[in-house]
Image (cartoon, rainbow, N blue to C red):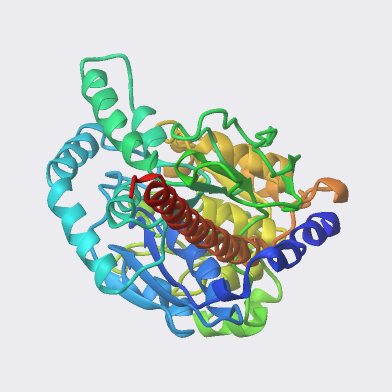
Length: 463
């Protein structure tokens, strides 16, 4: 873990080669999918690190996710703008997908794409944006290209892979594949992929493979077992439009802030209860939970549970407590002995970051799961529970199995560091320094060549 941190800390040394004239403050526009809370929570971490850089950058967050999720970054100066920027995925339950409605929504979204591109291009030009970051809507990449600025994807997956994963061998597959090509075309307009742990293949970046096989190499970038030494340029000397690099980074994870006893007391759990019981956190990444009344008595005798995302009017089983809608989940994760939910990036990263075993309900329609399951198996501890057992409250054996697991990778040499937010912030700043520096150099060369050509032409003209 220390080796990874040390390698990434060398970002600043490679920036010494960049002209001091390029060391300006930039305007970052961070587009965030409104599907689930995982995108938003990791963006808060990265955005906060960008805002903490000494050069006092400006950062906008653009999303159809609610503003309160981004409060951690907004309190540091991020500016929030609500806008519909992705089609998302329709989920009747936290672990199921309405396939037909999802594709209908995507078709409608793409039908309105031209108008939305115009809207975003005008806005990007109005605020003098320098770069678009995407986690992970596709439309912003196309808008950035039309506005004449670069874009970078910061994610462990893209939605073209998610939509393609909905193919089931029927007539709808033809529609899906046609739409996926349009989505992929927009992602192809990005110039950089900053790939988070738990990734799956990214269709718009050929050669990307399943985690933890990270042998993707590009010129001047060394990627070995997820470690990036960043000992060279992020762009290279050839034409910028042809450079589409992939950089792997450590885990982007939010950490707890409040002591355990304060967190539990604020929920209303008596001290004599949380001192004598183990705690299960039930969290499905912002998705509403249904069927709570059917759980019965699912906990072992010496356990209590905290539920996130339940219906406020639902009657909870005995020894269950609810938390506020805007509760800071890392605090609850840290306070728990085990976590139950779906395989989403936010939950997985926070379980690993706090060393908590994870009980997950599989979502076979989500292709993202393959990367996240590998992440949990290599960096944390996890137990799979069937959907039927979850819905019927047959939890006890899974809880007891999980609670004896370590929650973290036992091989220290293979552990990922947890400073991905800071690493991403330095990468995008360096990328812009080099990108704009290269652009200026190209323009200067063109002007010089034109001047030489005109002078030579003037000399060669007969008097």
